[in-house]
Structures are given as structure tokens and as C-alpha cells.
Image (cartoon, rainbow, N blue to C red; front, side, top):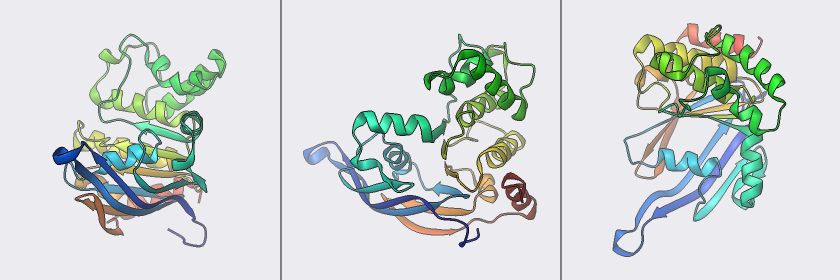
Length: 249
């Protein structure tokens, strides 16, 4: 990353979160400090239950922290009202879920168009824009199929298209390769990098899959509710070239 051209997209300071009460109270996040920059993929790595997903849920404004601050592009998420968080999330954040979360009764095109339709974009315009994104992720000609007719890798591509079609500034991916074989997982990460990694955007990926590490810029190691360390990711030259293509260099 070029420190002169990148700037902070996300700043997390002193975030704490607990669940339960009394003797059953469990502190999941214990004062998290973390930054993510525009134009980078930041990987969150750590054992199950260490607080990774809880942290991203707070970043997205879906859950409130008990203490601390969350700032996205100079806007304090933790100070927003619920309606403001919903509007901000709709315009700025995209999600790729581990379980895809596709609606089985909708076509591929309809599933991927949901974010644009929610924004109020006319149906024809939303479908045209979504079709172009589906083409980019390798699903040209599958618009009218139902998800059940597609493989797991193809369904994940629908989920990626749905996340990217609204051109979110922050893309959050929760174990995007967990149910995929190595080759398909690599293709999924290439798609995420090529389509989402631009100078005005940021990608955060929660993963246990070490094969994903080479697609990141930095790795934040999470353990027992804190960030233990943030280190450079072991990128290969081919993956770095993908980054340059994505940024038009």
C-alpha cells in the first residue's frame, strides 16, 4: 500500500461488548483498537468465538457497542440513530455471507438485484445493472435460473454480485470461502479483489482459510476479544498484479 495515497476508511477505538448478565456475563470484545485503509483488503483471523463476527456486526451498525467509537469515512457510526445507521449501511456497506442467504424462490437476477431495488432504483435499470455485474462474476446466461440449479461456487458468485452491485465503499465478507474447494475459493477471492478493491473502497474479510491470506494486504490477529497484532499478508506477485489491475494502474 502507498501510505501517501491511502487514508483511513475505518477507525475503531476502545470497543467493548458483552453478552449475558451476572455470573453468565461474557465479555466478547475487550477494548478493540483497529484501523483499515481505503484500497486494502484487511483479513480478520482468529479462533472461533474470539469476537471477529461481533466486531464486524458493530462496524456495520447492526449491533451497539457498550464502549468505544466506530468511525467510517469520518462519520461516527456509534453516534447515529437507528434510522441513520440503516440509511448509511444501505448506501455504503455490502455483505458476503458464509451461507449465501439467497432467496430460493427468486431467480439469480432477482437475488442479485435486491440491494438496488431496496434503494428504489427502477426495476428495469436495476436488472440491467445487475446483469452486467453477473456477467463480470461469470454468470452470464444464468439470470433466470433458481439458486438450487447452481453449484455452491456459483451461488457464492451470486452473493458476491449482490454485494458488489451497489458499489459499496466497505465490503464485509464473513468466511466467503468456507464451503468452497481451493480452486473455486481462489476464483471467489479474485472476483472480490478485482471488483471491490479500489482507492475509495475497503474490504474486510473474516477467515480461517490460510489459502485466502495471499489475497489480503494485512492480517489482524484476533484473540480473546482484542487485536493481538496486525501484520502484512504474504501476497504473491500474481495477486499483487490483480490489485494493480483493480485500481487501474
